[in-house]
Length: 281
Image (cartoon, rainbow, N blue to C red):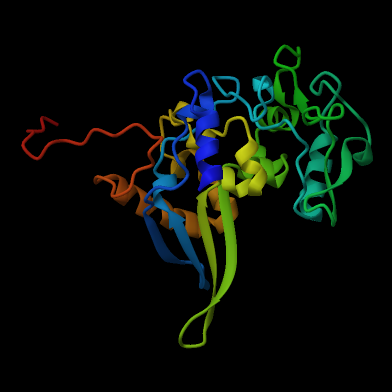
């Protein structure tokens, strides 16, 4: 308790964007349903998060995860690859980049990746950084003639494909967190449960609390025109399957038609018609 109170005192400064973030613990509304395409797959979805109006505000008010480096966004470190498929996808995408589209252009997979470790023990490969303690090598400066931001993201848009086809898994999945576990039911049967929820500070482990700012908890990033389940439709479909996403979208849309039991506290309250209000359309 003492450390938690101390943390609140340290960040509760009016000029500090972190002070405007909501608490990590609040009521959430969940829904669970079977995958229409797989009887052994169950989706458990966080409606509070998926109905929120979070949107990426990179370059449009993002404060970044390191103080004084807002231009980095959440690209202040290299991105760890999840598996060989992830590495191969990025390798293929990087070959499409040129010095005109990638400010820190490098040839050869080992030239733009580095070996590191996530847990301090097991070796893991990630994208390289521009310099020690610098941002990801794929991040172009805002004033780069070829375009600022992620070079892989921009190339995907030029090629007419979704950025998830070119970017590392961790980059396109954020800020959605998917956890999968095989669960044994009372009758002895097993199902794979995919839990889809918010990737908040805790998603990064203990180090997540040290981030200077994190967008999912900030009202400054809950300014989207569409709810998350719509704006992140392709990502959700990639994570749980198209049929499961289609069903999820139906359930979210139905839930959105009424007042939420547990709306996300960072999303501005939605005005709902009074029962006494006479509709004209």
